[in-house]
Amino acid sequence: MAAIDDLNSQRFYHGTKADLKPGDLIVPGYSSNYGKRKKAAYVYLTATLDAAIWGAELALGEAPGRIYIVEPTGSIEDDPNLTDKKFPGNPTKSYRTRDPIRVTGEVTDWQGHPPEQLKAMQDNIERLRQLGIEAIED
Image 1 (cartoon, helix red, strand yellow):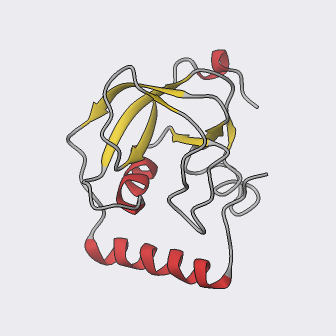
Image 2: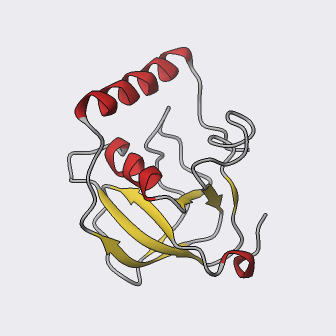
């Protein structure tokens, strides 16, 4: 796990469809947007806008995608779903934490992925779901 001090200069994002405001806390325990929708043991954040865009676009629900600037309130660790257990290193700079993350702002001028790229990603997620492949939560 990385200490917050090690990442103080880093800006973090969280993509979702939830309507939040500065000061709100995003906490574990809500139904996951992926797989069997189990209660998530972690909150996810990223240091890349592109990964946050994917989070906003792939989140379940009919609300528009939102991207928030967030800060961790505790330690964070590499997200094993997007790091060495599946991909070398941490190319998306994706992390997770069991501690809340605090919303400090919102990115409003982002552009989503092209429709064909989004469809390909959704199809891949559905294929993984049908194969019973779940997010790594341990």
